Length: 545
Image 1 (cartoon, helix red, strand yellow):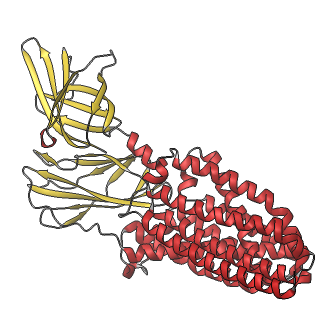
Image 2 (cartoon, helix red, strand yellow):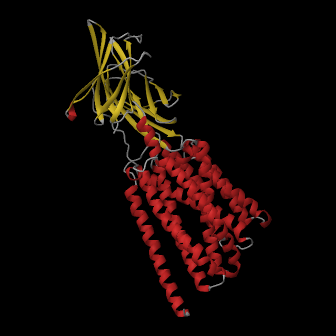
Image 3 (tube, one colour):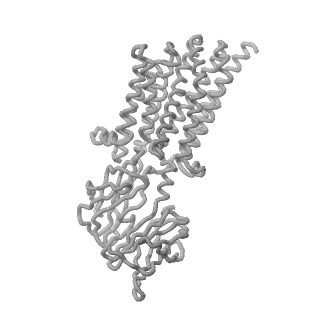
């Protein structure tokens, strides 16, 4: 092939690579918009409340309770009275997955709002509100639950910049120290990436505090915002990330004799920072998920960090780049194997069911990432088996083609960072499944009798009911028969009547029960106290979709 033909082919490849990169970025943005959730999802789902949402009570309750799908830590608890006056609730107790909140005052008639905001185990905040009325409902006080898209955009951007600092900056420093071995190509790029991370890390901590408290940007300078952000598990991620970024910077600007030690320590800290918080790190079993997140993060930093220094070395100093290229080519295969193995295992743990890939925002973002990874692996395989050997042999045109290909890889990696940062706002299907499996529970209180009713799982479909009946003063009630009656007249569904059985453990059970639709049902218990006395008590119960 003539030199002119080679140049023409290379030119065509460069144009195609450029259009491929632009197309991939456009597709990523389009799919990310499609996959993005329409509301702020909670990562610790609220399962039951007492009083129930929408309940009408005869008298003021002495306490409130919120039960979640996993343990949480309360951040802000507020009771909004019918006239719109907020009352901070500061006295609460944590009982496993339940937050028990003391009511400091006797509530008057009308509709009240219990507004809550908590932090879940993965470091992500969740919030919501519960409406209940005393005596009779009134116009509900206005409580804003609008999503702060400006704050969410800033959190996303901070996450991407932190990824750039950790993966491209610290990973680049490791590649320069261990693979380039004396070559300094890409040093300025790695320093710039680390500086991005050093700015993004503390800023992300403040944004985490704002999001946790539901506060606006104007509160960013308040100490409580930073204290709250530092108190979440994400605070550990930021602290370890700052150490990783500092070690990476030292390896680049410090004495060369210590560069390899600093770079290796920085790479280890990258994995530790990612394992300190986030969806995957909070998943069970943590003895497995945290090490996998660690290895996955280290693998990403090794691969992504080497791209810019390697591409710049091949472009500027082809002769010096040959050993660098050979070492990277030899090491990347086991690294990719680790990435694939850990990524697959984490995806299986988080997604659980194939249907969740399309049925949840988290799954759709994962599909976008997998599409980008397909292009990335295809391009990397082409570079490894078709371009590396001729480039090492000194073929100039192939070296230029390899540089352009590495540039496209960099663009795809940045796109993957953007998609991964979007997971910050989506609960994994694993968490949704845990929430869906939780029971729907209510306590029915009357002067003649009381009962605790739990329907498991608390969503529409095949369920089982467990009932504990008591006297009006919480004493044992030796009932002869108990019948559960579920009705939902607004949906045109006739009452579902099922007799309960007593297995002898103090509870009554109804098995093989099917609740056809979600929504608010009326649960009535017909309790036969004696041959001449029947007590009927009822209350609303919310069945999830």
